[in-house]
Length: 263
Picture 1 (cartoon, rainbow, N blue to C red):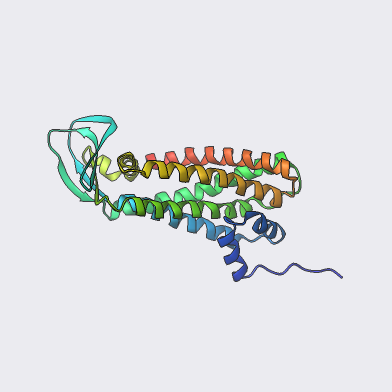
Picture 2: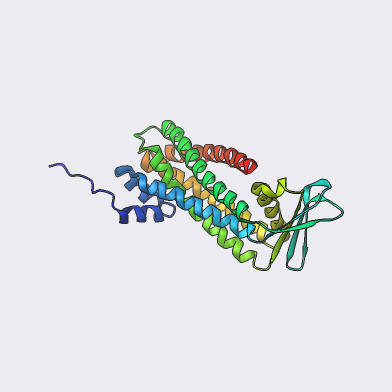
């Protein structure tokens, strides 16, 4: 008598999305047996939301000033009380434009969606190569790579919490840029505002430690995807997971840099 695998219901999808980034070996074993695209797509949407929230923790504090003069590279960062100043242009006078508006938040939305999509594609390519190298019987890479994004959701959400906690003492991040064109480019504003991290005690160290932890954890999640999804031995899975992580990170970083320049 043949037994059919139980269909993937909404409760199963919810558990997979929630636990893929926490207990990847168990979840990917289940996904390999019963693939579903709904959960993978949900992880991508959640990643877009988490990335937007992460960036909003910084951009909500930004106040833009413009002035004409020579560009300052790298920007000068200083602290005056509860205000961080990031000066990217050396001008004799500046005009206050105010906090970022709807146009910049719309661009942040596009940036978050682009980040989630490019990360999904990058991991699909990385896992495809890893499956080929590790051998075995690979599961659908689009589904497996979608669930890999669960760990990236946790990474962005925890970073947002970290930023909210450590930026409590900062009321404003004043960014001084060239007129109009720089103000419209949210990618440039985000990069400049993030340079204020060095002026906030403990923030740069905390962000670096956070990034290092999730770099290691992403490699573990990738190993689980190759091991359970590719039905490969653990030694081959570790090598394949490392290759998948390196390749996905390179592709995603190049794509995200292009998005930052475009937006």
